[in-house]
Length: 164
Length: 164
Image (cartoon, rainbow over all chains, first blue to last red; front, side):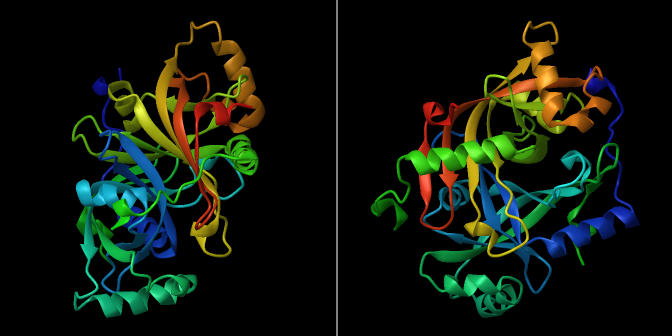
């Protein structure tokens, strides 16, 4: 019975923190798990992903998307970054799962201009739509994180472990 | 206001069904959104993904994983398949989001042997652990699906649209 075994997940160490930083800095998209306000069940979407000038995970979303309405209703969500590539068992490739609280950034917020400029340096193709009225940034403020570096290599991380 | 615009998502057509079949048949892993039984909020994991002999989406999971316990508590979940690759805007690459009901397959179930053999043809590296006592198959029975083929190319699909 799994609940009688010791926790197979280890605390963070320097190697886990370094791997985590690499996953966060290289990610340009993520999978987002949200709570569907209509059903209360879990939904999933691909989202754009990046880090703000302060290292905070950020997404740029359209108000037309199902997950925009979901995050407004239920800001508690989860994101996963780290792509497995085409070779080997995909479950041996590192990925990072973040539990987050989504915080929308109004265009009138003083940080918006710097966030927009920073985003475009890492997501240049977003210039096609970043200024559309329905697109908005949301910070994905980490609550906790789980790094899975492959079978038997899982680590719990705190928001402090995620800071650059 | 998004709720006053027409639904930007189209019904399924032959092209959408063909793209969907390609995404399902080529996927060897998926992102799973589940409801965390401890918090009631959305969680996310990478899972192995394939189709059973009957074309039904299937995963192979360890009972040690957080999502195993979550799917037992809340079988209503969502999966996403379709990898964006390294080029272009990742949000223009097709992906398929399925709302599913997870149904675990007991090893004593008469379908188990055929499911195991079929799985190994597409996931040969799983032979290292497929017979471990804590690994089990779960069908991911589709409830509905959304194909996002890129901006402005989204389609609703029914379980019938997903059948091969």
